[in-house]
Image 1 (tube, rainbow, N blue to C red):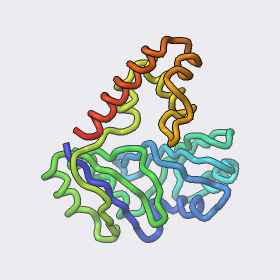
Image 2: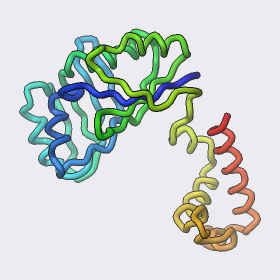
Image 3: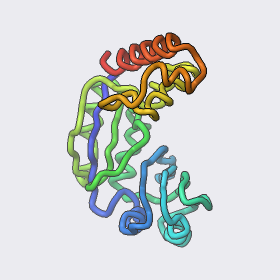
Length: 213
């Protein structure tokens, strides 16, 4: 399977309410975890936001292009938005349904727009690129074989391997100079040093094999 990573930019942003979120320094737009265009042309977003979510609620609740929203009470969380996108964005995200490609998530913000990875067979991806609305400015960031996402890599590891890896990273095993040793990790987890060595070797083999295949 092939993938193409683009930075897309469109005048006015992908949704009118997004301009309000982008302009407020008290709100941090971490990423988009879900985006889909419904049959009626409206858009559904699951947004990871941090900061003043009370202000987010104010922006979204009475916005004429927001049909409904659900904003958590905490200062960090997933915000649900059902709204009306601008036409180029509606056409762009509709390509997933009309061509059978996948928009990988999370989708992240850049200084100029959105960083989006699309996956599918090579011919379909080229056809999709040619059909992206001309109002959207494209910058190619990467193309080639599809790389696995974080959740897919984690799924390769057992619960014990994740425990060993978490301690290793938190204690600085992969830093230069190393902040810990196999012996210290083993003591913290309560297993034999050889067990830590074996787990780390298996972790590195599984993860690196997937990343370079």
